[in-house]
Length: 364
Length: 183
Image 1 (cartoon, rainbow over the protein chains, first blue to last red):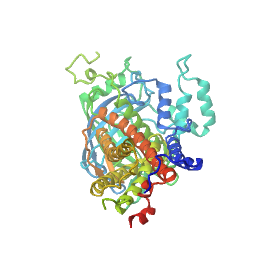
Image 2 (image 1 turned 45 degrees about the vertical axis):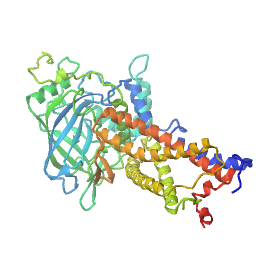
Image 3 (image 1 turned 60 degrees about the vertical axis):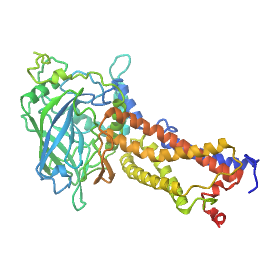
């Protein structure tokens, strides 16, 4: 072949051809990553909205920031095994790592009866078919979509002047989301139990149980306490009274919950977590959760994992509920961010969770 | 075969198959890493087996490359350009192999189960559970993805420069038109 100059002269059209393909790819890439659409709802915009409400707290979960680690086991009884082939739902005992927390991104907030409490669980059967969940003590989720969640956060962010949410902004959100009124009222008027131990925690989101023959059944579930339930009334004047009570309970005896699976009835809306299901739906007692130990997040085994609700075993699948997708994505983002930061001493310290006899952790 | 002007048929098949897969993978990756929308879980579920498939193909391709060397670059190229071409290909191979391992390793360090296909087949962890390592590898996965995408753009631009401006044999050596040259 004859020797050519390194860069022969060529028409502008040919040069355009050389530049066009990489440019088109680059623009497509930027679009896919959301950089060309700054108002798109993204993982980052969701976490930004949480931060607008609760501030920046490096090292902590971006939501449900104040919490404590627990361990124990789950014992399936096989009652739900016909609906789901998940190994955790067969009869048998599997180890559990869990976490109790208060909703919200403030890791040092004061405990109060009406604050939303959550239970997070990692059920670990042999073979790695884990089931993770983050479940809450409210009857329904306050919103239907990730966009509504973000808008609600932004509407309820504190006004810099007062340090409190601007009622006008919250009112404006409610006015344009009339379909969330019922959920809001159900959450506001829910009965409050005395603490973490006698509370009921609900999946809120729907999932699909998948049977051996591939049959899918829409379900929700809840953890119903076996401890007697006492209503919230007077409580110790203590910043951490809910957690102290839980720690005292777990030091005294194990705590148990029954996993109650609710099967969707004909009129239940599957993919909208802001809508409750019918009272007369079929309920299945699928097993018993027993929690025995409690540990501070500083050293506890719940700190290094995320309770992503879409970490599901073979036999349980996500429903079309859009909140689930956003939770999974935002939990990953939060987990990556906080794991790269140093965790300060959490509100519930190792001294507080130390067994009695270790004395100084106890408030008399 | 030493003086072949074209890449061998297996090389070309591997190249174009992986070109499509890697581009799809990069676009899925950058989209799923930002979205909180309805396709998030589906895309994450697709990203893992596609990444493992790319890893397997990249290793096959590396073996193939060592076995059947590529055609020589045009002789009139100054050494610096030959070096650039060679170095960019070494980097492309390194990233094709490193990206799946970093992804696999980061999920291992994050304590995530790593389903390969659906939920039934799990990959074993390749690194110990270590949240700080998870955070570092999660960032590395992003940085390396941008680097890989940048290398792909450079590669496409260079290929088109050869094909449209220089009209030399370089682009043809990887396309089907090259058949005539091989006779």
